Length: 442
Image (cartoon, rainbow, N blue to C red; front, side, top):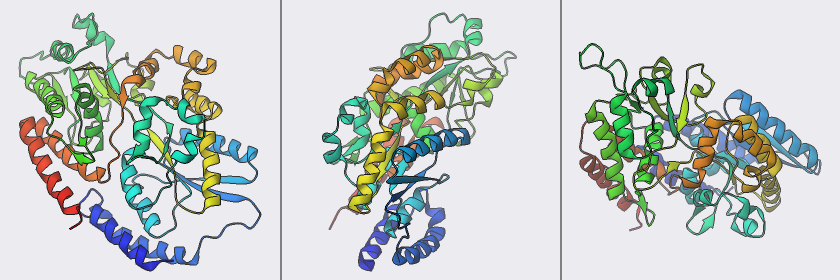
């Protein structure tokens, strides 16, 4: 093992992740790194049976989905006797373990993870570029075009999507009816007016018993993800030429819109970092909530329907996509991993996986298949998400995304608590500028 390379990667790893959201795990990472380093230097043992045995790390949840995934992996193994994939569940948060395995030279063969961390993996030299393989395959033209952005970075394709979804707004039809709202909001202003009508203070104590909409208080990933549809809808961005760019009109407008609804008194803020919880919606204390088809609301007994994210400058939403990476190992193992990726993108896998889990197909062939069309037409709530896919945008995969998201999350939280959007974003941008400047070679 090249120990000088390992030391350089450890330094880079520490530089990027110290003072990040994983700082509390640093001591544990160092211990884990030592253990993995020892095992890595001894080499990885594989069965000497002429079969290529691959490991796949995934965090598929809930357990029922994990069972479905395992059955589909078993089907691949049955039809590919010379390649056997072992699917290994890695519970969240798994990013520190992934990066540790990379710098210790004992990564999995295939990794399932969020595409916004592509830049981190690329910078560590952990993943294999896929464009040469994909350009020779008809699979590329079958992948939904708007998912390609999350696959690409710096002129290369680094991953393929396994599953996708997006966010919309769940609402309580009976509360809309009681508020005499007959048309679903299609624009930001209509959403703001609907939220006002749905906010009810029955006893006049200025603490409404019912609010129009729930917004997620906090600076974590859920808050940032929930805000992205409004950023995209305002025509905004947070990255320009591989650098953070928070000071643009779209970002300011999207934050201002959230703050305007708070000033209207029509917003219930969630408990800190708990904006994904559905209790207030199910109890009728809030009439609208931003979330995706994975929510427990879908399985609840309360009346509920779904409306698309209302448009600012344009209709838009944010994708929640899980991608697959081929880790750098050996040519033979990488080629075997590509066979598994072909299977993941097949109509067989995509259609069955989507129908049984509620994720949306990542390929056009599966989305247009007779089986899936019959399924989606019988699921009106899910169809809203399906119909939004053409206007769904991905979070950027820039290297250092975790730092960018952390600064952006702090700006969103500050705005929700009363700071002006422009001031909050200026502070976040200044912090990011100093970080990015410090990372440049001297």
